[in-house]
Amino acid sequence: MSRIGKQEIVIPNGVEVTKSGEVIAVKGPKGTITKNFRDDISILIADGKITLNIKRNDKFSKSLWGTYASHLKNMIAGVETPYVKKLILEGVGFKSEVKGKDIHFALGFSHPVVVIIPEGLTVTAEKNNITVTGIDKELVGSFTAGVRALKKPEPYKGKGMRYEGEIIRRKQGKKTA
Image 1 (cartoon, rainbow, N blue to C red):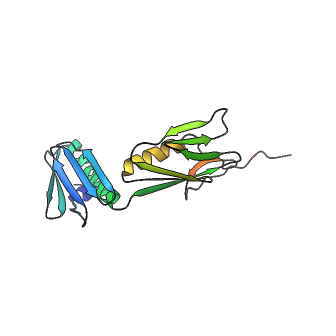
Image 2 (cartoon, one colour):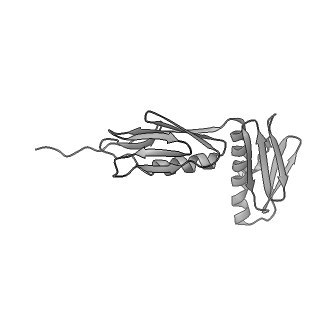
Image 3 (cartoon, rainbow, N blue to C red):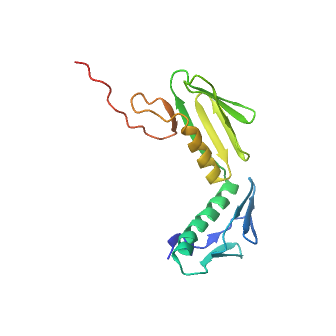
């Protein structure tokens, strides 16, 4: 039994949840998110609450039960208050700037690195702080992880891109005799 799947999800005021076939759309003050859900889980929307039940009693359906509940909670939370992830770029000569629909990075390579910002995200870059904001938690997280992967922080001086609040374990450098 899924602890998360068993709980009813309360739909707050100002948020609309509609189901048409396998597609569920959540509309709120910050925007609209749509997502496809398999028919292994029955999703009932009534009286301002969402209830999820499994149709078949197999392992796959049970694994989707809590996952779908979490997806719906994240969609409802995202249309109320957008998700925000912050990256900090540390290192001499490392720069980032937003130009239109792209982010341009100078990361110590022989060429500038250009990353296209996906639709539905807003990205700001002030000095060496990059802020990614959007209503889709999955999109915000995956885009931020992809940007961080361009220059991961190294353990000796801590240069590279790290999340705000992330602690980099430092290593001791070479010892002199």
